[in-house]
Image (cartoon, rainbow, N blue to C red; front, side):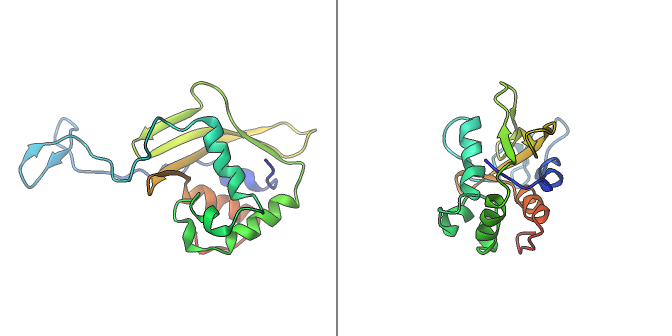
Amino acid sequence: MKLRSMMIAGVALPALALSACGSDENGEARDDAAGTTAAPTAECEVPAGDTPTRDELTAILDDALDPTLPDEEKANLIEGGGDDPEVWAQLAEQAAANPDIQYEISDDANAIFPLDECTLTADFTLQIAPDQEPNTGILTFVAEDGEWKLSREDACGIATSFGIETELC
């Protein structure tokens, strides 16, 4: 669970990329072709099961920075992660070069908050060095291909904080 100090800028800002859909005056989704009110539908392939746990979301971050995990598997952890397969080896190298930095998703009962069916946020803490105060922020995760993934915006923030230029951004 290691990251570089400049990562704060990338993870402290939530990536609240919510999509809008048509609605009637009461805020209910409408089927414009039929002119009737319909139940809202997710604009993503929602993962099966409950809201992911702290451990499941932390595993996404851990795996993305694991130098032993193949890049193809890492690309499945990030929204649009296949757009730049070389970025994963670079991120793993940078994380390994900074062994004192700690990160975690909060274990508070309200730390993981669904924004809608396709998006959730998680309270996040980053400690740059053992003698410094921890910094807190929010990470955003999105449902894509039936899996929860770190948002593209937050992944870009992490890569940028390491000085890595990527096609993801």
